[in-house]
Length: 121
Image (cartoon, one colour):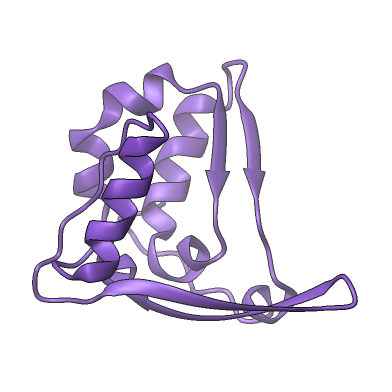
């Protein structure tokens, strides 16, 4: 998340709901936003990822105790193109444990997956 009004609102709402958060702070980027349009029960999303594009494996490693404690993992589609190494690290370690993987996979995003990098292999 960036250092802006959207970040402040996310922290306020999450705190009010009792959520424990471990946001990656990227002061040089704006917090990502998403517009949602729902018509007749169908939804469309338009997102500007902002600081979420900067999410990295180092932040995951620094918060590994949260990964170890979790039983359900939700991975949104932007991780497919921006944080492949994070997905692979979590998947490899948690695959043998009783974890429930969940995610969103818009078809347009999966039609052109990024090539694996040596850091994520």
